[in-house]
Image (tube, rainbow, N blue to C red):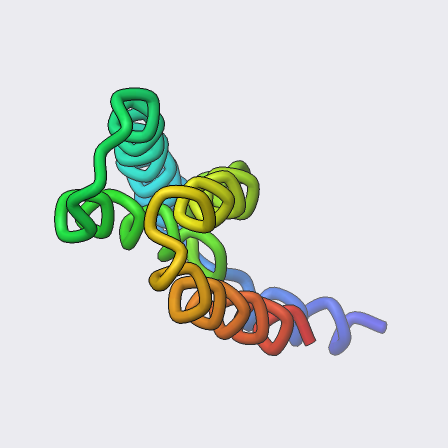
Length: 110
C-alpha cells in the first residue's frame, strides 16, 4: 500500500507549475474575451472588411480547442451567423475552420 502512495506522488506536478498554468489560462481567457468584445462591436457597426473581422475572430477561434474563454464556441457561432448574412461567401470556409477546431477539442478530450 505504501508503494502505491509513493508512485502517486511521483506524478504530481509542482504547485508553482500548476499556478503558472492557471495564470496562463486566465490570461488567454481575458485576451479571447477582449477579442470577442471587439468582434461584437465590429458586428454591431456592420463591419464588412474580412481582414479586420478575422483579426479578432481568429483569436476567438483559438479558444474553441485550446486554453481560454469558456464562451469561445458561442462567440464564434455568433460570428458565423453574422458572416452568413453579411459576407455569405465566407461562411462555409469559416464554418469548416470552426468544425476542425471542434474535432481537435474532441480529440483532446479523449
